[in-house]
Amino acid sequence: MSNEKNRPEENKQPERGGGGPPRGGRGHGGGRMRMVEKPKDMKGTFIRLIKYVGFNKNLFILLLAATLTLTALSLAGPALQERAINSITITESQLHVNFERLRYILLIMGITYAAQSLFQYTQNILTAKLSQSVVKKMRTDLFNKIVHLPISYLDTHRHGDIMSRMTNDIDRVSTAVSQSLASIVSAVITIIGTITIMLMYNPLMTLVSMVTIPLTIVASANIAKFARKYYSKQQKLLGELNGQAEEMITGYKTVLAFSKEKAAVDEFSEISNNLKNTGIRAAIFGGIMGPVMNIIGNLGYLIIAVTGGYLAFNGVITIGVIQAFLLYSKQFSRPINEVANQYAQIQNAIAGAERVFEIMDTPNEVNEGKTKLSDIKGNITFENVEFSYKPDEIVLRDFNLDIKAGEKIAIVGATGSGKTTVVNLLLRFYDIDKGRILIDGKDIMSVDKNSLRKNIAIVLQDTVLFSDTITNNLSYGREGATMEEIEEAARHVEAARFIELMPQGYDTVLSESGSNLSGGQRQLLAITRAVLADPAILILDEATSSVDTRTEMQIGIAMNKLMKNRTSLIIAHRLSTIRDADRIVVIDGGTVVEIGSHSELLARGGSYYNLYQSQFAGYET
Image 1 (cartoon, rainbow, N blue to C red):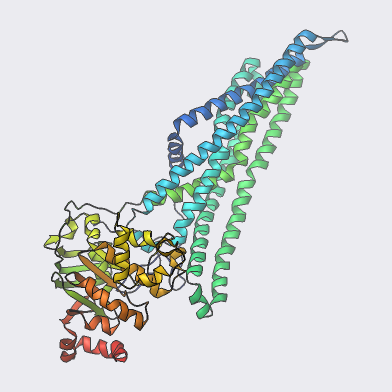
Image 2: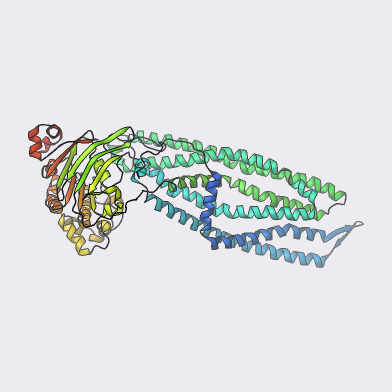
């Protein structure tokens, strides 16, 4: 099976009863993501991030060369200072200065420090380019993954949390790459170079300089243990906060209509308060690293000064060597301190990257079918179909239905009976547990999903429009459609009238989700899109629920023309739509209980009669 309804329960939302898939996008009943702490693979995540850096090899090599040069120049500084100091000597209470040697060394020092500034600037530019390239690659990969995820994943995960991973989490990776990558590379080189030079000067002093290293490792490891946990939780809470905000904004009218402003604020405040407390703890453990490392570094500085003074007093080393060791000890501890100070940032980035990789590691929607559908007639057969969104809650059981090509079928039933599930299975948004679904005798499990869906057009109750021109929205399901074909389709469903009255006509750019149109206008555009797609099979899922009676009558004639000689499945509550169907299929408890025309089913006095009396009779005129 290619669906993922058996995935672990963490991060799932409360599921709706019987007839519909679990919803994760906008939430229902104030449900929240469960906060489940999982073991995190810091090493594995870091390696994956490094691989993203590897996609920009040339840029990384240039950055590495600049960092190597910059580090070499910084390592040369203390050695030059040692030679400059040793150019000044005191013999028998007389001060002696080798001015020629001192001038030469000072000139070299000036050139070194100037070159160091130049390469620092170059490093900053290369780091910025590399970080943006890495983020672009990662964000593109994540978006590509999202558009290939199975419907079940988006139904069981909050959309706000997914958006948070696309924006906030990847932004944290960007910040870490831009500010920490060069520091880490420089740190490794600096430590190796510093140890080498110090050994050349004096092995004993080198050993003294490393006394504080074990203390540094123990302190950083213990602080990291606590900081990482809170940064991971902080990222999850941020995703939950975004999801809650997205739900409130999307359902703002409903919040106002039920006077739930206070409840919405309270719920948001609770999540926000948890985020604040977690953020404070994360900041404490992340921020304490720098001061602790500074204390340890200063302790090491003191040990070197005392030991160096003793050795110099006994003539083992010169004053210049002491100065060099003090500077090199700072250089030795500086990269450790820098990484420590950036540890909060690094932890944040790794926690964010893990959340991004969690989505990337989710299996894509499986498209194992090889058969291509072409020139289909539109015969549809459901044979002993059984399906459940959750293993213990069967939605369809022993579902059998035979639909002839060109037939107009209305599917009715109480809420939760499984009407929309039939559509989900036909389009293979979900795959069946048992049985078969056939189109023109071909099992859809063996059919290429893209080929299957290109032969089916669907008009949903919740109209989906994009922030694009009307033309591009209408031609979304048919690439290469001419303007004449688009206009003809719009006229076909009486949509051309209001489109031509728009400021730029067909070139008018719609607001988000078509919010600058009425509900009826949005639905007319969705129906026009289906007309333009010219499918063999048409699905109307409450397609006219958002239009008024007059508009419904206007598009009724056009819809009848559209459905002529085309297999049509209609899920509707309005009597006028149901009554015109060739056959009405009544679903109850996930199975077909009655099939017949409107008059036949009324005459039987069965399930349809009872449903009609409770839902439809009041609409009849």
